[in-house]
Image 1 (cartoon, rainbow, N blue to C red):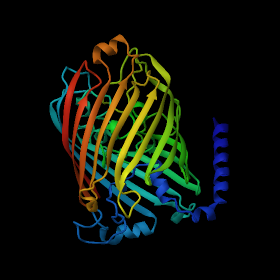
Image 2 (tube, helix red, strand yellow; image 1 turned 90 degrees about the vertical axis):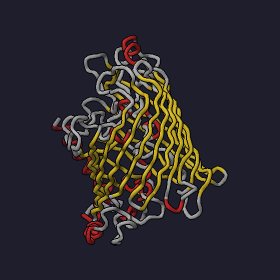
Image 3 (cartoon, helix red, strand yellow; image 1 turned 120 degrees about the vertical axis):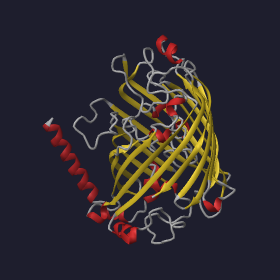
Image 4 (cartoon, rainbow, N blue to C red; image 1 turned 135 degrees about the horizontal axis):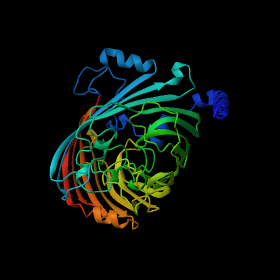
Length: 470
């Protein structure tokens, strides 16, 4: 073990020396958009198009300033000039469900026909390491998150494989301990050239793979159903936050990326690394291609994820629907290997003048998985969304999406008797009103046909999300 540690240190020192020799080329490149867009969902994704940075304004008009808390008497700007940028977000969920779970369910599931409130906070410190004597454009993201109110909101009341109000189920700490603050990101990112960015550290999985322009992020600015945020056929078996390393290679035609993840969920840990990869490994990769159909922007991406760690053998047990990340029952037989192959696309139908990223269009996803231990054997989704043509000057957004979850056909007699797993589907519609630069309010409705007919019936989910940039 000591020899392995010494070898790792030598490799790191060698890599650092190679990188140091590339400083001038890196300093001449502008990769900020690529770094944020290629593999991460950030707090500032919620800002309306055309707004100023939430970290660079000293306006004192609370209604029109870009953040709720303003510039802190100039301190915020001085910190940013020194290389320390703060970004925060507070999101409130008030949702009800008519229908859903209608039979006495096993915990943590609960009966439907209820209304619940959940709050969620996210706080980022972005450190410009170049200003601290580091390499050009090197950054360190430190993120803390917490939730309060009812964990998961009505996600555990629907009987659906995909959590219905997914952002209210993250970060997935102790459901009986609201308010606990968790360190979910401690991520170092370093461009080595205009065509190669590397990253390593602790990172949450949201925004890391299979992201659509009109259906992605982390559930605080677009859709809230997990099936329309990211693909449930691979996301259910991933840790919410864990140690990762990888690369992004931006190209004129799109980008290529690859990564590895430690399969142990590290939400409740700070920076414990003594048992890293002790449970196995997760490997993923993706290729994204830009398109220009009818001179309108679009993108197509294809990728895959292979998980080499223990998950439930569906012939003997089933992960409770709506619970994320997928719980493992060590008292039952487990399987070590699983995979998901996926494809997704976005295509603008209308692009507003003045911005390549402003407009609305179509999106879609499709995937196929092993079917055991992955409970979702195949998955489809499609919809339309983007910037509202009604109030585009205010930054409103809208979306309507449909999804279909193809359940595994390898469930055993006990899971079939308890849950009755079968195919499920749903539709979600939202309209995001950008009230001012730091506040948006989103009415949201869903119709859910659950994939667990043994315990649940069709449901209608309705509610409001309010999002504040701090």
